[in-house]
Image (cartoon, rainbow, N blue to C red; front, side, top):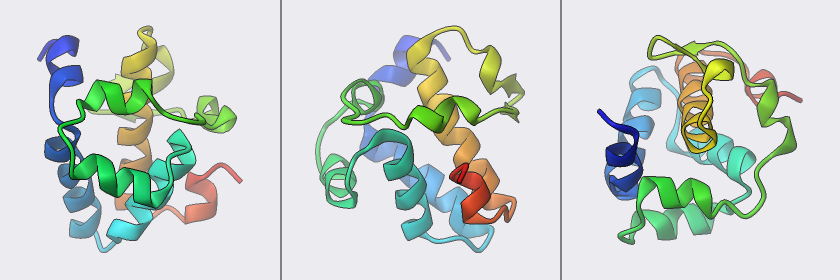
Length: 116
């Protein structure tokens, strides 16, 4: 799938898939919201509002109010792609969230996921 197609998908279509992935492994919607807020600077309420809108997935990341400066500490492989090797900035932001949800699903403690 091309990057532009991913960027144009509705946030409300993609985000529930991330929640479902975490919930299948015993994690919660609240934890997914927590890592998303940590990564992007959105409040929980802003994330919930985005879920009720037609916001594109790419725009969700482009408009992030306060991207966490520690997000560059997110490393590893997600979906066969090494996160730190992704060259396109917007796709890297998307992969960061994918990696955080993967870490949740694998049972990693929240303090390690949030790079505290």
